[in-house]
Image 1 (cartoon, rainbow, N blue to C red):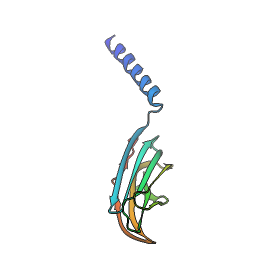
Image 2 (image 1 turned 180 degrees about the horizontal axis):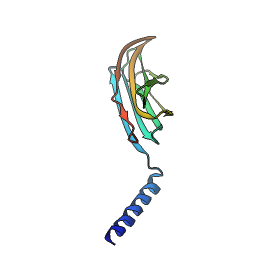
Image 3 (image 1 turned 45 degrees about the horizontal axis):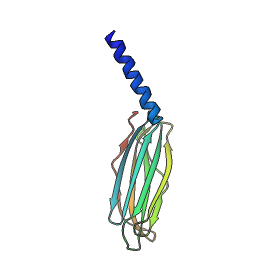
Image 4 (image 1 turned 180 degrees about the vertical axis):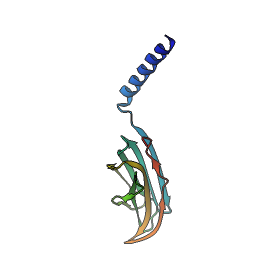
Length: 136
């Protein structure tokens, strides 16, 4: 009887949590930067194959160069795919975007590359840690 009562309380608490959040997905994030450029992603893991991504890239120097950032995904076979570059130009300029990553073989992790770019020349880059999918 005691176990049944605890199970009912736990089920009620989970129902309340899902009602308040609207989802049971897991969120995580990471960032990276070099002098003059910074970026971050916030990841909302939907499933083992899909994640929503909020990304931000910021130009942090008044030097004529600009900041660029791109997201990479890793699938279950260990293959990495790089996505489109996002750019912010002008000291203090921040650019945000919402997108998603979906990999049919399974989305194991995400990371970003943030670079300082002068005209068309990449001058310096940094990579974030991998954000691992909790569904794996």
